[in-house]
Length: 171
Image 1 (cartoon, helix red, strand yellow):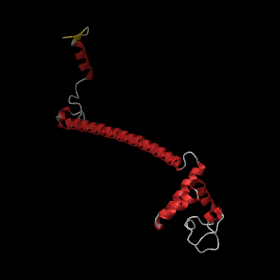
Image 2 (cartoon, helix red, strand yellow):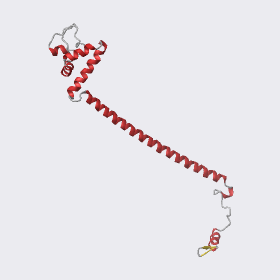
Image 3 (cartoon, helix red, strand yellow):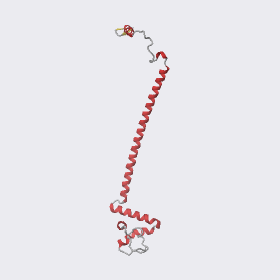
Image 4 (cartoon, helix red, strand yellow):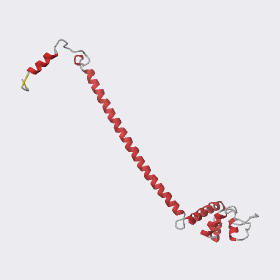
C-alpha cells in the first residue's frame, strides 16, 4: 500500500506499513479503536492469517465480523456477541408469545361478534315470522280493527264472567 500514513494495525504494532499490508484496507488510520479491539481479542498474527486465507471479496465482511465480535467481547467478556444473540432470541420469543395472545384475543372477539350476529339474525327471523302470522290472520281478529261489538257494555261482560263462577269454582 503506497501511503504516507500507516494503517491502524501497523501504528498499533509500531511497524512500518508495507505496500501490500493485508490489514490496511480494513483498519484505516482514522479508526484506531477498531483494530485495538480486534488485536486484543484475536491478536495480530491470527487476524492477518484469517484475512489472508479468504478471497479478496470476502475480506471486508470478515474484518467487519471480527471487529463486531471483538467489540462485543470487550463489552461482555463472558458472552460476547452470543449474549446479544441470546437477548434477541428472548425478545423474539416474547414477541411470538404476544402475537399468539393477540391472535387469540382477535379470534375470541370475532367469535363473540359472530355469535351476536347470529342472535340478531334469529331475532329478526322470529320478528319476521310473527309479522307473517299477523298478516295471515283473518281481518276480524286483527287488533288494528275497531271493536267488533261496539254496543255491548263492558260491565255486562264482566258481570257475566263473575256470575259463571261461584266461590272461585267455575260452572
